[in-house]
Amino acid sequence: MHKRLHLGKHDKKKKNDVDMKIAVIGLGFVGLSLTAVLSSKGYKTIGIDVDKTKCRNISQGISTFFEPELEKMLNDGLKNGLRISDDFSLIKDCDYIFVTVGTPQRPNGAIDLSMIKNAVTSVAKIIRSNKNNPIILIKSTVIPGTMKDVILPILEKISHKKAGKDFGLISNPEFLQESSAIRDTKFPHAVVLGGYKTKYMIKAKKFFEKLHKKTPIIVTNHQTAEMIKYANNSFLATKISFINQLSNICQRIPGANIDDVAKTIGLDPRIGKLFLRAGPGYGGSCLPKDMKALIKFSKSTGIKPILLDAVEETNSRQLKQIITLLEKKLGNISSKQITILGTAFKPETDDIRDSVAIELIKKLLKKKARIIVHDPKAIENTKKVFGKKISYESSIGDSLEKSQCAIIMTEWKSFRKINNNLLKKMKRKLLIDCRRMLWDRKFDVDYNALGMGKEI
Ligand SMILES: NC(=O)c1ccc[n+]([C@@H]2O[C@H](COP(=O)([O-])OP(=O)(O)OC[C@H]3O[C@@H](n4cnc5c(N)ncnc54)[C@H](O)[C@@H]3O)[C@@H](O)[C@H]2O)c1
Image 1 (tube, rainbow, N blue to C red):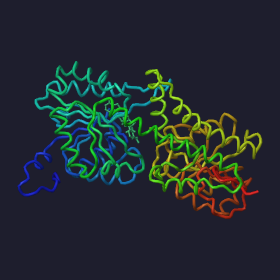
Image 2: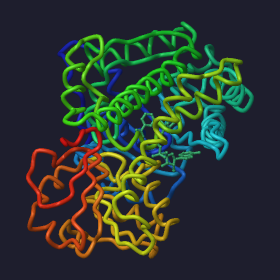
Image 3: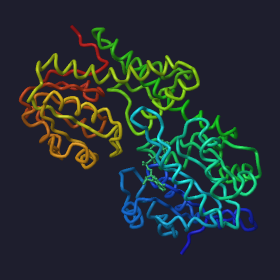
Image 4: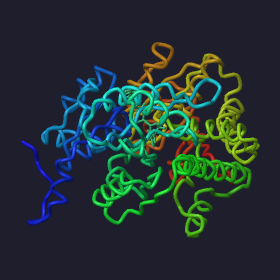
């Protein structure tokens, strides 16, 4: 039975909202989080994905990736009647259609729009015979101009309908972070609605006002909404590269401590404390690809993106620095056994897309090192990349056995459990802590932390 939103006694408008049908196209991190949140709140929701296996798992309440709170919310949604399918015809007569398919990068760094072109083509075919006037919201990250030059023409041509008249079309970029995707979907810091100021925009604004009370809603045009997303991510990447560069300087000042620097500047409200954790560089499914796409786009407009180029360059140097330190300590690393602690691009996720740890392993394998990996959640995904080329251990202790160096790459809480007893198992007691997780501990090892100048 459908669990309905709590309705006021005489509240007809809210009743209309509950009876609205919402489709979400593309059930990855963004789409599945949105599907789970909407359906658990009682909205009639339909989740669509081209991946049949994914659909089958999700219909049984199983997420194909790890994200805190997601499966619980998904199961609440399924109890409320959430439908999951690869059949686009189910989105017929939906009032809102969110498009959340991937927009990965092509080998040359430019954005790959093939999935979004396919998705909106499928949507257009269905709305062609729609009797109602749906609002289509594009959540996928796309470079400025994509909505007007690519998405809108496809939709109008194939549906034989007019945007703004027969259907609404809104750019609605997503800002969630993996590891807090559910919380961020429920309580976003802002909602951006880009498009023409039509009746559809007014309706969508009301919808979001009810969904996220008190969240600022920014109404702007398509290209500005598209740019806001890149501005957001490139600023975050800039913060990370900034603190990483300072971290490298600190490392060369005996006794200096990057965490105290970051904590203190973060207290200045003009700076803010988030994204100032120095480490091996930014990774993940968004920052690297969005930076590359923005750089490429910027060049196409005739603007040389010197700052963005420097942010990227700083990021790639972090990894080189780890390898330099490793070789300084071990000499030639060929056939030496190295333990990598953490392959997920951040804790509380199993996502390894563009993870710096994965890049590090690739580089170490080229130098013929023997690699053992431990990660609390991402081993299965790591196996898909490296197969039998490396070894995997489900316990930290076993992963350290006979190793000549251990490198902490991801800030998983469980790595704080590392102690002298576990480190005893190593052949050579060398630890590189890219996250300074064990800085305050006393170990019988050669301990090296990024951003900490060793006292001399
Ligand atoms: N992951 C994040 O943290 C995050 C945050 C903000 C914005 N974004 C952006 O949101 C978008 C989605 O990201 P994601 O990480 O959720 O992607 P994802 O790769 O995890 O999921 C995309 C899903 O879309 C499905 N798909 C592909 N083509 C399709 C089609 N034609 N019809 C239906 N489904 C289709 C895929 O099977 C997959 O399940 C991207 O543009 C990304 O840049 C991602």
